[in-house]
Image 1 (cartoon, rainbow, N blue to C red):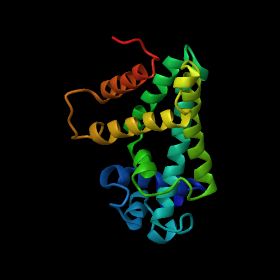
Image 2 (tube, rainbow, N blue to C red):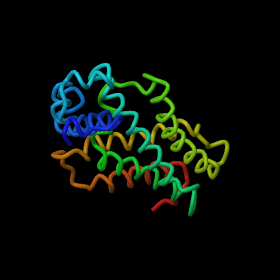
Image 3 (cartoon, one colour):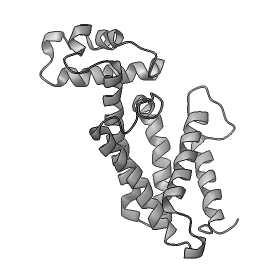
Length: 202
């Protein structure tokens, strides 16, 4: 798209798209604002009409990522259907699926140093994704006897950490494992849930 071909608002999204590609190729801190501008087909000065700097641009990539992520987790949860256990497992798999399908967004969210509390806008969409995970966990914990029931927030944090670890260690290109990342996550969640008595031994 030529510089003259941008309508109001399109340039901002074009810069985000350019940044996402650069993040995938070079990492969140491996590119300059000038490179993003060049990739979008505009001058570096034009970037400052929409973003205060590179960190502001990456923050917008993260905000959009959290928005997609939250929607994917909500879809995976599917209101707890067909069962709380099946829906919970789907939410865990959605984490891995998001990281593989949207690597630029994922890195902007979790590897750029951008805090979810950087702005009210980012905080709101980040909270939506964490709330989806915790809601799925609370529904599942209802099937654990009260005296053996850990806090839902803690279980959600454990599953989140497990999912993140599989992504970081085994879902990256070039990171090899004798097992598929999906199988690692599925079996890890299975072991965890068996420990809670939610899945029969075996």
